[in-house]
Length: 375
Image (cartoon, rainbow, N blue to C red):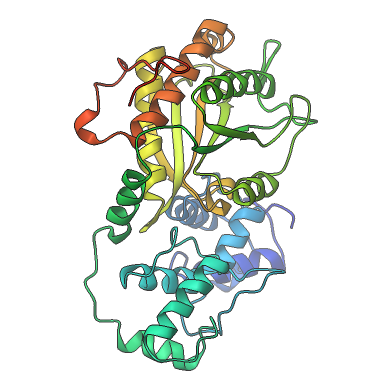
C-alpha cells in the first residue's frame, strides 16, 4: 500500500481513522475530517506505533497498516487454524497463545502468528481436556478455554521455563547453533556517511564474530553473502529452517543530526508479549559493547520488527552506533574497535549460558579461542 501521512485524504485515510477509532485511540465523530489525515490522526498513529513496538514516525506504511488490521481481532471473532500457505495473524491469536502459555503449554512466545507451534500447543490442550484433537480453535475449544479462564495472571509465566531451558543446555558453547545476520547488503548499502557504508562494516564485523564462534565449536550461518542481500522474511526463514538457538542481527544507525550517537539493542517485545531470553541477551549485549567501546548507552528496547517477530528463537538486533556521528564513525571504521565489538558479542552469548553465580563483572570477561576455553 502507499504510505499515508499528515495531509493525505481519501478512502484509505478514512479506513485508518476507523481502525484507530475502533481501538479507542481517535475520536472519529467529526464528519468534516473523516477522510483527512490531520494532526489528531498522526498523534493517534504515533501512540499506536509506540504501544505496538513499531518505529514511531506517525506514518501508516505496510507494517503499521498490518498491525492496525491485526489489532481489531478478538478471540472468538473467527475460527483459528494453521494454514501453511498464509498463516493467520491478529490479536486474537495473541490472546490464544497467551492463555495457552499461562496454562503451561509450551510455546516460544505469544507473537500473534498461528503457526505450527501454536497448532501443536492447542492440540495438546484439546487432548488433555477431552476435545476433538484437530488444532482448530472453533466454538467448542473456545468454550473450554473460557471455562478455564480463571487462572493466576500477571508476572511473566514463560520466564522461568525459558531460563530453565537455557540452563539445561549447559554453559559450553560447543555445538550451539547461531545465525549471524549482517544487515542490508546487495543493492541496499544501508546507512552511508563520508565514504563508509553500513553493509560493508557489519559484514566485516559478522566475519570477525563468526571466526571467534567457529574456534569454539559453535555452528554458524550467515543470512547473506559479502555482496548479496535478503529480505527480513528470508533471513527469518533461514534461522527457522536451521533450528538456530540464537540470532544476532548487526546494524549501524544514522540520523539527520550529527549529534546522535551510541549503541542500542532490540528484542521482540510489545506489551505483555516478550521474548524473555531475547530481552536477557539484549541486556547482556548492550552492557558488554558499551563497557568495551565506551560508546553511548541507548539501552535496550522491545520491538516487533519482522526479523524479531518471525524468528522462533531469541533474536537480538544491535545498532552498533551512528555512522552519521563523527566519533562513532571513527570507532566503527577502526578494525581494533570491531575486534572489541566481536569479543563483546561473543562474551554476551557466553554469559547468557553461564549460571548467575559464575557471572563476572561486565566488561572484564575474556574468552580465549580454541581448546583453552574452560566453562
